[in-house]
Image (cartoon, rainbow, N blue to C red; front, side, top):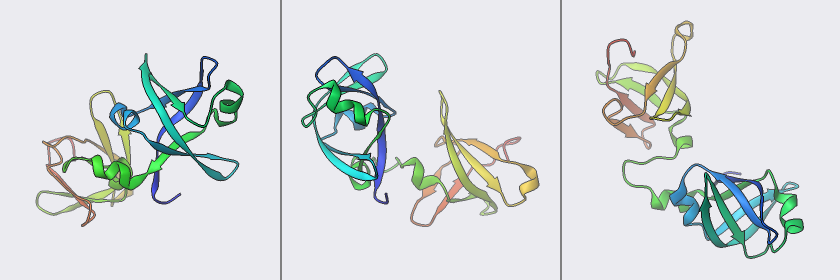
Length: 169
């Protein structure tokens, strides 16, 4: 499981040729797929992506190895995985995988410890960093993940710096 990340989920079939209707979060990642892993019965199976088309809010993915509804049905509800390094290669310098942010220590710009990032929630506008403060009686702190509010993200040092704004921290 280490070293792979989910990029979508097979929700259903589309047509009779075994085309998968896939839910996804990043169209650029989905459109660039070549080889994917799908887990079934505890085993990872590799599939070659023959084509990707977008229809409404879904991706229609044709796998070379699947040619009918019957061949696709056992994979319905399964996540589609790719190697983590494949995604990391395509990230810009200021882009991060959500899972890499979880567990980072959050500090203000005076280097005072705020807490640990426990989750990242996706909203319509921005992703929100969920920070668990050292004093657990205070409750979770939500910070919009925007460059203006989070100017420094250092994955290697496991640290983010959050610009303090009145009412936020």
